[in-house]
Image (cartoon, rainbow, N blue to C red; front, side):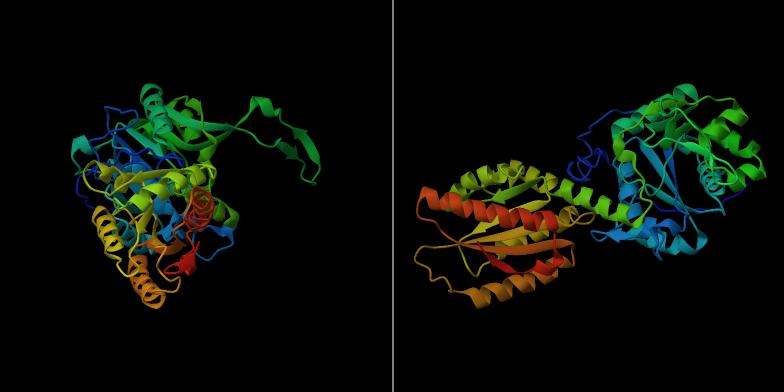
Length: 443
């Protein structure tokens, strides 16, 4: 069986950040591959992501795997969860033929490096089979053939490396492994007339989830031996391995984050999770200013009361560059009403590191006006410069906002001012509202 595929050649870099929704967005930059985190396997592992569904249950015209939120399609988040795992070699994305061009555009735009694309079939099993066959197709180097294949849904964006490790190791040892979750509701059987026939004892049953893992030989042979009926109506890969290869899968309790985007409301939930993850910390850059250090002291306390961590640093040079690589939110203290060169420097640094490529970064220009500076001084020019720079930054997926604060004179005023600034800044960071980009807000 031959399956034509499109290979996307990357730069050979490996991504090893954890992919848990609480961590996968906040690890080191993609270039920091020498800082390996999490478990590691010493055998080749590849992934098949079936993404050929039409998404009818979402009620949207666009298939759900391609629906965007925070400027990025859902499938890109799922791909990145696997790309961050250094020991995963290839991610085979299976899409409908009419969506191959769209998928290739996504790969190019978000610089996914480990992805190959293969056309899907008319059913889920046919699509997965196409992906499995393509992974072992003739002509590829023997070293590229995976020992273990992980099958996962393209619309389950949150999967962490620790759990993938459990699935991969169990699959290698047992031949097959799969995630399970407790049943939330009691399952009942009905009669043809629509009446209750019987119910199942919920404690004895589990919901089969993704990811699932198989040795390549097991899943390949299972698909070679299954029937047309299996291809047409089946959905459970573990059942094929048992029925046609006699391989009884190891079942592993999965985390609650394995949920699947099925309905339109699930897209909003996924966006909410990512926003929450991106909003857990910020970095205040004082510029070495004494007034900036004072502000940082009071802001750390105010942000702490909002369950947010605030790192304070004089700059992003030398060892302090680590903040640039791990934070998504930056507050830059300035006492000049007309100079935004410090903001431009951060924009350049973020662009060089591709930090905002996958998720929107936030920069808040914090202008501290002096005690002898009139409250209206410089505002028109100040606002115009901020708006112009914010428009440019937005094209790079960086959201630039401004906050203006008249410098307090005593400790009590500092505490009140810091509380107001923290409320405004945390709201900007949490909501990431594009409508407020370029606005200079008064604290």
